[in-house]
Image (cartoon, rainbow, N blue to C red):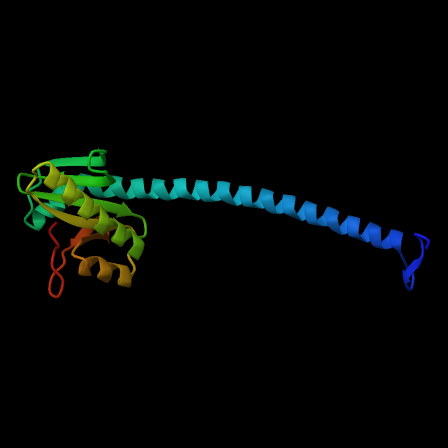
Length: 191
C-alpha cells in the first residue's frame, strides 16, 4: 500500500496528515490566546477591585466627618471615632475589618461603607456584627452594638433589606447625607 494512496477523491494520506497538523497548530494557538485573555481579564478584575475600594474610601471620606453630628440628631452621643479598624483575635479565631467604628460608654455603631451595597454586603455585615459581639463578650464589653450601612447608590430592595435586618441606612441627600433609622415594622438590631 502506498502512502500516497487515495483516501477519498482527491485526498491523500499526506493531505490528511497536513490538515491534522494544521488543526493541532490552530488549537495550540487558540489555547495560548485564551491563556493570555484570561490573564488580561484577571488583571482587569484586579484593577476594577482597586477602583471599587477607592470608591468605598471616597464614601468613607464623604460620610465620616459629619457622621457623629448626624447620629447626634438621632439621639446618639458618640465620643470616639475610628476608621479602618482590624480585629485579629487569634485566640478566639475572630478576624474582621471595620470601616467606621463609633463608640461611647454604652453603645457602639459599626458602619460599613459601600459604593452600591447589595444583599451579600448586608449579610456580610450581619456576620461581622456577630463576630464583634463574640469579641466584645470575650473582652467583657457589655455595650450594645448597632450597625449601619453607608452607600452612594442604594437600590430600593437593598435599602428595605438593610432596614429589615435592623441596620441604619446612610445615603446621599443633596450636598450631604441622611441617616434612615429602622422603624415601624423594622427595629434597630442590637448585638
